[in-house]
Length: 141
Image 1 (tube, rainbow, N blue to C red):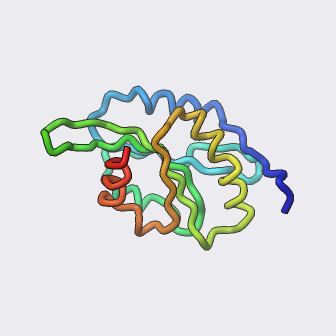
Image 2: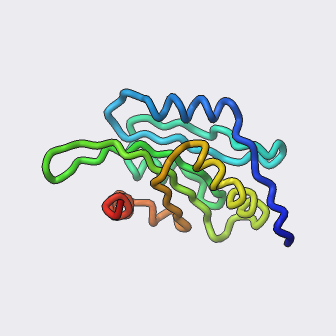
């Protein structure tokens, strides 16, 4: 493999969805699931989920294909405060197609910058995507 990795373009639909998602007023956990369209080499919207649990998110993801997730998580703190951290989660299953893994990996940084998200996490196994895992990750920020 050469270092010539194609970076997939972010579609205008995804840009708009991310912008609207960032400024949403809802008081629940929600997610944008983004995927790479192999034919057009563009990052497209796969699914938008509102008022979900982390378990719902886990069930919405395909087990053998990478995905990018922009997550607005309703975090209830011990002192009674509620915050809504925005997170970028890169899900890349170990057994997904090598070409897909390369396309996703090559586009990850550009998409993360486009989304303007500093909290970025990577997960390899779907069953690891739990509330406990997320809270641990958020606790380190």
